[in-house]
Length: 431
Image (cartoon, rainbow, N blue to C red; front, side, top):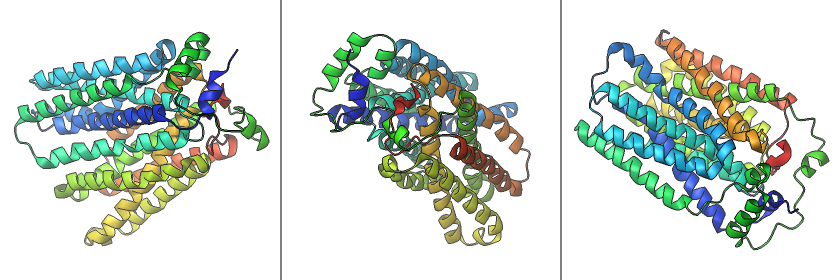
């Protein structure tokens, strides 16, 4: 019986991989664009005071619901069919948003859009690990995830454009979501189902047909391709860590990014430079996006090293923000230098932890467990954001530093008790 998954992991990059990469980059861009909408929506209608705090957690709340719903669905019906479900949900949410009149209808529309975004993002994470050759797997996912910064840039640029009509804003945003979803749909008509998932689901004949149809223009298999476990055996890797450790480490790493980024980067604008908030968020996205091109080299770099060194860098820069506060409050050059470096470090950490927490699962449960670990990450950040709203302004950066310290503890734990998953290793090592 042919093992098509081995061939999929060892073929050379071809046109099918370029189509997949394009579709997933646009998908992560749209997810980040949707994520920003609740903050923009606060200018459309008057929200009751008791709902203002809810708005701040509306995005992570519905993203985690989308992820935990789409994860098991992708494991049950397949990755490709799940994408069509999330795209359909995008269109429904966009239509509801265009027609929404009061704050209740707007919240419902945003919940539908965010539900779709959470499911889409979760499935992109899972699918990338299974569709790309192992020589390019890390690079592909790092660069796909980096396009979340482009989505934030686009949303901020629209906010800066200051379209005053609420109906025009909603119409523009709704139509843009539908248009992008349609483009993604056209591209995804060319996408294969995960051969790894088909084989684990017992559909070997379908896996063979998918391989023959979609990988026929991959001219050859990489010469001397290893078995999925050879590199790990040769390098003397320890036994795979247990599921509980993987869930805990992945959840804490993701939580430290989400909560820390919200406390630090997103708070700096409104609290210290309210007149520059939109521009600060714009520069955050641009600097993070440029720094994210380190992903080009990620297939040759250690995942454990990137996790550890990036979060140490985040803590160092955050500490510099704290001890030089009196300087950068009056000297914007110092502020911008620190701010750009912090965003580059945070983005490298984000790309690495999102890659790690979605790769360390067996194929049949990858969607489900990626969804669970993202619930821990996003869900854990919600009470932090709520509680932090009671802190004095000066304590925000200290709180951010504390959150990053817990992330460092998780990174060190994985360094000591986990295994290396980068440097071209096969995702099939997990089964």
